[in-house]
Length: 224
Image 1: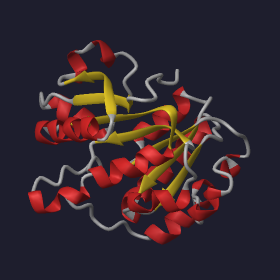
Image 2: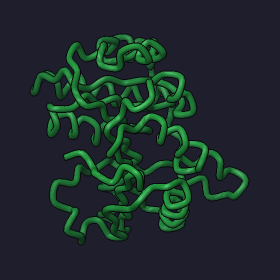
Image 3: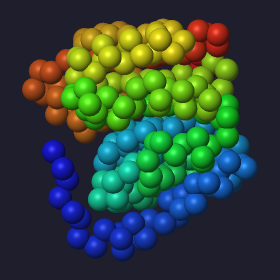
Image 4: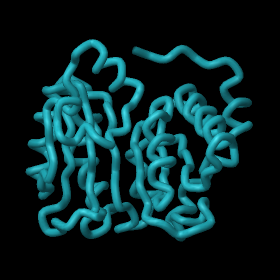
């Protein structure tokens, strides 16, 4: 479902400019610069309205978080959520980029990411759109260059077909599954799970959520 255009979106984003990385290409020289302190770097691709990444920022003050979202009308809401929550809990570990995941290799240096989160990515169900899936081999090759040794990818989806496709692509690209479930809310991994907007809606409807965590086979040790 396409989100309606937000009134005064540009002005609302500008009001949150202190959380926005407007020149992401500058991260190539120092990805910790926007945060002012060096910490392990995590990335969410497709942050939606920001519930997950804001929750993660609160739960993990020991890491720096970048939330990537290509739709300005969506990131507007995520930025405003982050600003509102920072008034209750000051945070310096969350920043946003408006852009496309295809450009990540132009923005971030190799071996700079400890973890990548793919939460309820568009499954692009038609075969002719397969290259747009965020777990397509072309994207996985980008992630492999950006992940540190022991770095990992954690994905969640309500789409069983997309989940199976992703598991196949992970295996083909040299990733090893270290955790997976096809019903997250009923699994041992439910404890500590940060719920997204989509996830809450699907769970209420009784739709099972699939989750997988993967690491590269030649870098099997996942960071704590």
